[in-house]
Length: 406
Image (cartoon, rainbow, N blue to C red):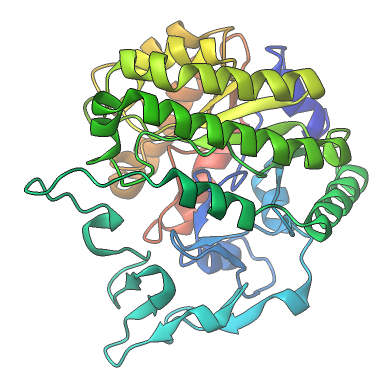
C-alpha cells in the first residue's frame, strides 16, 4: 500500500498492510526541536537546522527524509508551509541563547536575557536556560478567588476575529502547497487550518471559564455562536480550494481532562459545547464528505467519549489512556468501529522517558495490537516527544509499531 492508501483505509476501519503512523501531523503529535537534531544524526541523515514552527512548545517540523526513515504516512499542512515545502526566505536564523541553532518564522519576537533566559515579550513567555519550552506565570492562567469573575468582552473577541481573518494570499499559498504535496507525494494530507476555537480552558483559562459555564450560560452560548460563525466563514473561503487534496482536518484542541478526572461535567459539555461541534463537523462533512475531522483533547476524558462521537468527530487524539481510571482496553472497547484513535501508542510520562528497550517494545506491541483491532488506528505517542528523549527510543517505538500488521 502507499502511505496515503494505508491512512485512508485505517480512517475507514478497513484492513491495512501495517499500522499507519504519524509524527507531527498536528501540534500534539510532534517532536521537540531539542530532540530533533539528535534524531537526525542517529538516523544517519544529513545534518540540518530544524524548522521550529511552534515556538511555545518548541516543536520541529519533521523533514520528509525523517518521515521516510521512520515509516510515517502523514504530511502536515500549515498556513504557509508543510513537511518538505518551506520557503527559505520566510525563515530566520536564531540560536535560542546559544542552546539550539534553528530556523524560526520571526526571530525579532525573541529577546535573550543576561542569564540565558529567552523571552517573547509580546506574549509574556519565558524559556529559562534549564527549560525546553516557553511558559508564563501561572501557565498564563492565574486565578484570584478574592475578585469577581472577569468579564467576557464579546465585542473585542469579534474584533480580534475580524482582524485575523485568512488573507487571500494565504489561502492561495495553502492551496498551492496542498496541490503540490498531493501530487508529488503519496502521503495523506493533514490540514491544520482555522479551528472552531471553543474550549473549556479558553478565554481566561481552566480556573475561570468552567465557572462562567455555570454562572452565565447564555453568554457562553453567545460566545460559541460567534466562534462557530467565524470558523465556518473561514472554511467557506478555504475549503473549496483544498478539499480535493486534504484527508484530515484539525478541528480543535480542547483539553477536557486532568490527570485523574474531567475539568467540567459531561452535562456542561453536552449543553454548551456539543451543539457547536456538531454544526462544525456537519459543515465539513457536507462540503467534503471524504475529509475526516480531528479533535485533540488531553487527559482523563473517557467519560466524554460517547459525546465526542455524538459531535460527529471521526478521529480522537491523543488517546491519553494513562489518565484516569480506564486502561487502553477500555478505550478500544468504547471506540471500536465508532471513532478512529490517533495516538496513545506509548506512555510518554513513564515508559518512554524511564523505560529500557524491552519495556518500550513490550508496551508499544501490546497497545498497538489492541488499538489496531478492527483497524481505525493511527500510531503515535501520547502527545509530543519531549526534549530529553534519546533518539534510539524514538526509532524503537516506530520500528516496533511498523512491525505489527494492520
